[in-house]
Image (cartoon, rainbow, N blue to C red; front, side, top):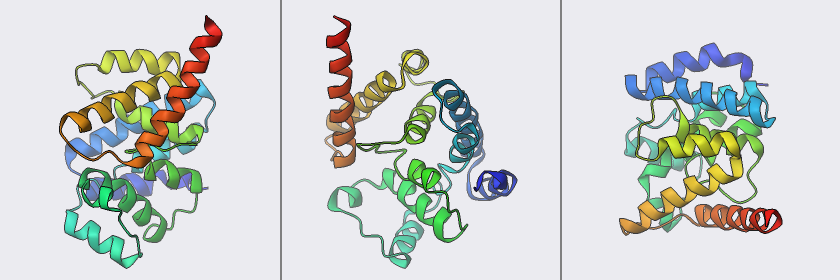
Length: 198
């Protein structure tokens, strides 16, 4: 397990991230641990995933592209058009290959914390939501998102995906297929829940 290396990870992210992004990462780690305890995911893994989720966020795009080349990661046309999502892919590659992180659950949580995907593990969902609801977040609907996160991870996932997809569509940007598959899966599951409640 990699969670015993948190001190090392804190030093690493302190070197690689801006002060704001470092603060955000500590907050996401705390929030991920809180949500993990609430919903039954591993709290230590959740904390570690939160710490390292943005490890490559402040790394220049050309350096991330070099990392993709080094580890033979091929970007799809949608990914090439979405540099904001690169840090999740380069983050996984950096953790796996440069820091020798071997915990697949943590690696997958980092990899999909921006796009989400169908078939996410509990830990992946916890990190995805924690990134939206960490203490310093102050976007318009953050209180709604926090309320939903405390009621149901699925409900919060649906809201988060709607928020992201709507924003991208409004800006005329391509939406990653992983986000669409994640949205459809959660929407179908939540519709079933609503029908059962009726």
